[in-house]
Image (cartoon, rainbow, N blue to C red; front, top):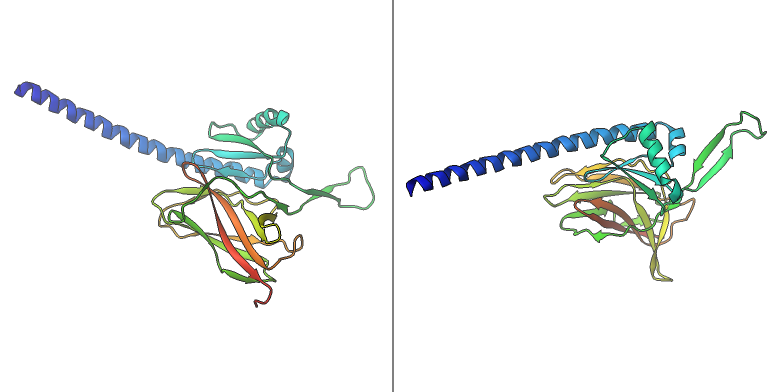
Length: 260
């Protein structure tokens, strides 16, 4: 009996030791994967953003970052061209299992082509002006404000406001990621619904990692008053965040006509 007890204890210690080593290895592998993910994201994102010709060819303006993938979004391309775009991107820029490819159909890039010379010449160059576009209010699970919250710098703004600063606070013990993309909406009292407003046409899609107890992530949101003039009332800035799932939250503020 003593012999059997000794054997059982030996096996138990051996199993615990093996499990502990496996846990340490998994943690090291996860850290290595995150480092590789961030390094590759920085590399791919920089390549796209410094080359405007590349942006126009691939209808892509940057690389996004999710929990375990680098997201390459082709803007408004035909579905039957998706495989061609994906194959060309892998061949000409980079190929990695960490990449995922998508077609973004809810963002319409309103591109106005403006010739740089009045007379049409064989070697005439063309410049592209990206106009602000309205983005749909994102859908997804509503974020618990006890876990993560987003606030405008002020609750009230004057009618002349052209910029609003927001701050994102991570109150949880979890890590969240997000990009610089956002949606802006105004509450129309007449039809009692939120309507999308113009936003930046080519945002710099940097991947932000929001760690617990770190300083808040801050971002400046521009109000394109030349496209849609400010109106008194309630506004919301929506952003999407990623943890295990896609989650959405917003910062609300109000514009007043008699506020200075």
